[in-house]
Image 1 (cartoon, helix red, strand yellow):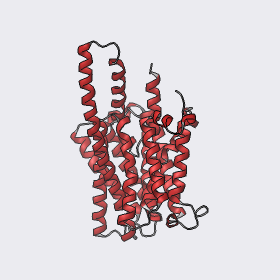
Image 2 (cartoon, one colour):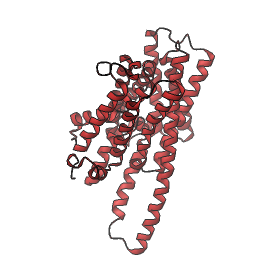
Image 3 (cartoon, helix red, strand yellow):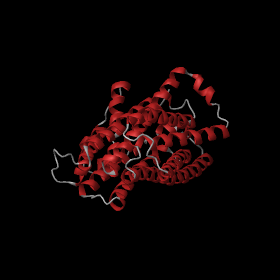
Image 4 (cartoon, rainbow, N blue to C red):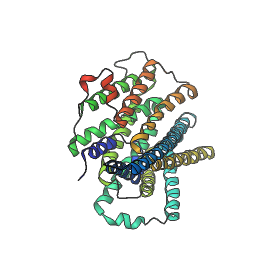
Length: 374
């Protein structure tokens, strides 16, 4: 039977997963195993065992540092892929977003297939093991691919910082869906966290009915719609992931994600203005570069979780908001004001504390009456 701490960590970990949590299932299981071992080994140890335990904890800290650094690099690579997508939407406006995602899917399929073959992963056996969970895996990858396509589409209609920040509100939708389908409960800390995230999105997107003269006016309603669509569909994928987290190798998820990138792009491309006909050779090279960078970021993400405890290193994913603001200001020359910085900083702060489960800091600050005692 699982302990109370284990269940608590699992609940908040699933709520605050990164965008690509569905590609790192095995390593979350490894993180849970480390947690359980720590609890077991911490009971009535003799002196020699205690010294061994201290050495092990020191090694764990080193691995967490390695994992944290790798994850920061992974987030940078993902943000760079988003930057290329935004660059294409500005300087190659006739290249359809779905064309870019079509090639991203093809590269995911090719690279994942090569790695599955090289590592001799019995993917057929894993897929045939449980038909119900295989269906859940397919649905999860379907929503995961759509979330990424919608996020890329949002970059066409709004600042890169605005789109990515709105996307980072998906933990809110995860929690709402968890309440509906998994009977989860909000803690007071969760409520404060989500209110802060909602206010931050308002600060950054600056809707016209509130802000009549602000930099956010450059963000169209279409962009906000696609960004929220990406957040919601990603949240659905994360919720489904709770039911199949340990049943498939992560490369199978990567492969299927690529398949759905291709399938969704092929289905929707005929309804676009240009289709694939406007893809130039230079545009193809940019698509190739984006796809390779995307896969490198994915690989670094998985490797980071292999080294470190996900609970301790996942807050690094919110550095993506900072990178997006930098691109927004210094590369695309879009205005960034105090509300942009305040909103982005608030989301980073609250989600980091939520990931780390650091409630005692808030008790020492100004939310004493809002934080649960347990």
